[in-house]
Length: 240
Ligand SMILES: Nc1ncnc2c1ncn2[C@@H]1O[C@H](COP(=O)(O)OP(=O)(O)OP(=O)(O)O)[C@@H](O)[C@H]1O
Image (tube, rainbow, N blue to C red; front, side):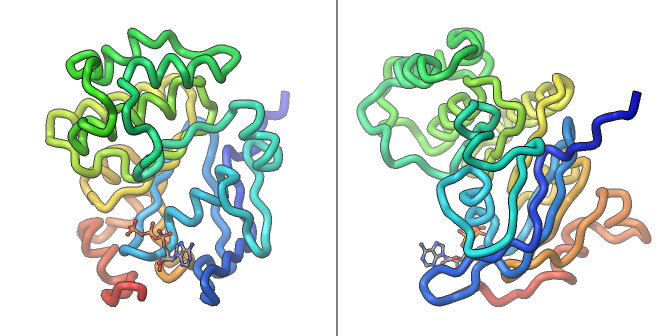
């Protein structure tokens, strides 16, 4: 039997213009099924914009996105995609488990809420409303929300930003388990050790374009650190 080589995510020549500027500039990228793909890039490089396009929040101006061989709208509508955004201003007064139960009710075959909450340490602050949680605790709730619908492809936008080293390690272990279970993960991070620990393949983007891609071993061949490679291949000036 011929193996199915349809990628989890395939982006071709994507262009996004916002506020009169080109934010994503003819960008092409591929993420394989069952792998962890890391998107690195300086502040303002376009990482979140790209994720917004892949999750149906933003329509690109040109180019194509395929998720497991289907279009974004279909993939998202059928619950095959999960998203952990950088911030969710909307939840305010709701408590973590109430939120997860609500999100679970939107999916056909959700994960059981309590074990997921336990795994992410949410039960420790179960009676606190979302808006009163610390930044790292909110991140943990956001991560649970991304996973509750058993997505086949999950986008994690800076999943460990603001987390202490214990919480970060626990997220790393969860990402390893997701990979083990065959879930495809695309994450962004500014932490080079996180990318090196988790990613099967890294894509470095700068000013909305792919600057470089490869496995950690390929990128760091010759004794350079991932941070050296990042610094050498990206612009030090922050995007306006
Ligand atoms: N709605 C918008 N209108 C105009 N410009 C926008 C809009 N949304 C994002 N941008 C701009 O697009 C650029 C890319 O932003 P984006 O959030 O994708 O960067 P990023 O790579 O995720 O950065 P960071 O690492 O800081 O999170 C920035 O210059 C940002 O100001």
